[in-house]
Image (cartoon, rainbow, N blue to C red; front, side, top):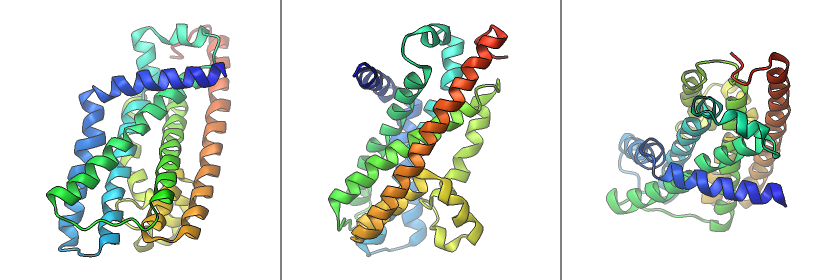
Length: 258
């Protein structure tokens, strides 16, 4: 119960902070709108409501990942530079809980992205929007938020030993955009790209979103379960790796790990 209370409180604090930061707001609100506009203009005059909705939500997922990458890519580095890493590690609760709340807060900005892109597509671009299974879409979107947060946490923990972690993490923005199928459908990509996407949680989340919009509840549920499994593996890997990093810090008698 203490852990859940901490996660909820830390999530709220991080979410409020990120909601007032221009960089995160750009990634979560402005960038998805720009991407959605580009995608719809490239597609031409699309009157298919399902295709228009999928394209719009795909842009929102891209914004969700961009915000997550900005928020979690150098989370430990920011704690280190602000002098907060030592007290956070010394706290009774594990460091993974603090990082998880940060990752969840940045991914939750994707809710802004979805609202912004759907509103922009309908009101500004005049596109027809339709969701055949709204309930399944909500479930898929929530699962995608958790999956994106978990993937961001994996990158954050994996790069903690690298002094330029934030710069390196930015490299993963566009590859994940492609692997999720949110920007370009995986069906038009080489077969090996689709195979690699099996280990990318947000890719399953996007498949579930696409199926929910089309009304294929069975496919949406299958993709949602796969997304949940991959997400759980992400969280487990992050916790185990972070424990190893903390042990290494104690062996070196220094938290900066540099």
